[in-house]
Image 1 (tube, rainbow, N blue to C red):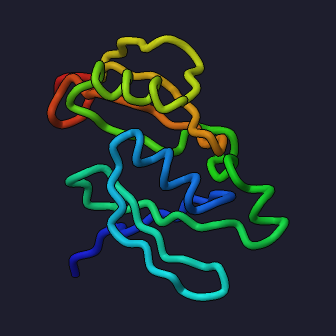
Image 2: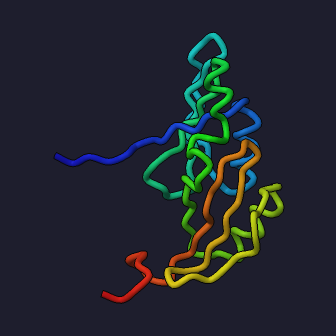
Length: 136
């Protein structure tokens, strides 16, 4: 059986604000379907990515309280790049918040950033094609 993760749901307060931010950092909108009653099926992803983020507008107080905390305060989204400098500048221009300057680790170059909704991400460029930090 072949299986894959097709989408990961990302809670947001507003579809259009999320679309605007993610468009500024280079994501593409793959689908934006009106489902009625203010609900939409909005799929976004970096060009060429296999897995989509499904933007899910919070529809209850409990969901609203979870916006920006789906990872429990941890970095839980990892944006891999082949051009760290370009994408770091793109994030800066789009208004992403950075927790510290970029750093070099055994596995590659990384910076922790927060999107406008409070989600913590890594922007990472791996130093090895297999994404490992050490030789095997």
